[in-house]
Length: 450
Ligand SMILES: [Zn+2]
Image (cartoon, rainbow, N blue to C red; front, side, top):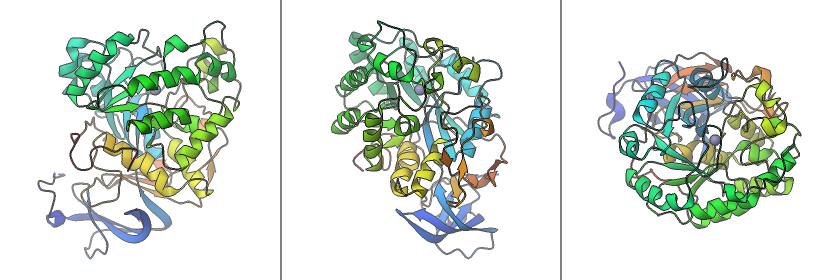
């Protein structure tokens, strides 16, 4: 029986169940340590450990905190038959070193009231391989209060997208922000202003899609976010340009960039597999975003995993859905960039592990006593290539086909191994989680300035 720690201090009363030893990322650097994990699944101590608990030496690999991906779409319930589910999506997350996913509410039915939220929560229990935070959408005014006692956050769409046809009008936003601010949950926003879309002709390539939903539409919507009340816990999803990064940093708002906007441009491919909202930008804009990320100016990386079936993406460009899969490849692609010397490990771990977990109020993302022992073991010499057919997602394709990747060799969830030699060996013990910290508590609110 797992026990919960009552006080934050003396963890010695818990018994040690596992000691992991080797090089680990602790207090901002790699150092050789022993990490003791207690029977509540938390890190008990970091340093020398004399207990008789089972020991495991990771050899030449390194121990890192597991990641949080605060933006995924598993399309469950209501997705097409034989498509992604919460079960397959969370196993993909586990294999990709992700311990917690934030699942977006634009499923069918939309998660807009308590009943739809509860129906979705029931799909997590007994099925999910990792923890799931369920967002809700604030489209039913009298459902906001009861939803806020269950959901992990809200998602607001300022532009039409899969499952959302009519976003709120400009005049509706200020009262919506005021109401959401009182509920104190994180609010993620899809920021594009549809009034600025170029609709005169039908786009047939990623280059034309970029012209159709231009940078100006994104930056105009981000400008609206910077005028929202300060008490709102606002986070801008999938920012694609340096202009966006500068706006959001200046107003100290949280935001994310996706691996596809960091690594792919509107000329990386010519078919609908490269169709995504907001669009892939020009190579110059992509490089500016990547350089800002490398400098640590992008606080969070998130996948916006959208595993549309292959046949849907083979439709004519203008009819194909937007979105790419990514939860399983996000960390491996970026670990390969660390290995090649293009990205600092410290920058990656802050953006993929520490800040997103703190943004969602979760006690992990760093190797520290008292944190949940959600850890991965990475062998930086074990490079592989991304292959769509080998991914856990039934969609079977990826825009990163053939890209270099470093997959976690092991993944521990609360100290229990769920990935071993790169294979999923866990059980569906994932839970629905909500923010455990309120804003203002120590460690709660990451900003781009930390
Ligand atoms: Zn999304």
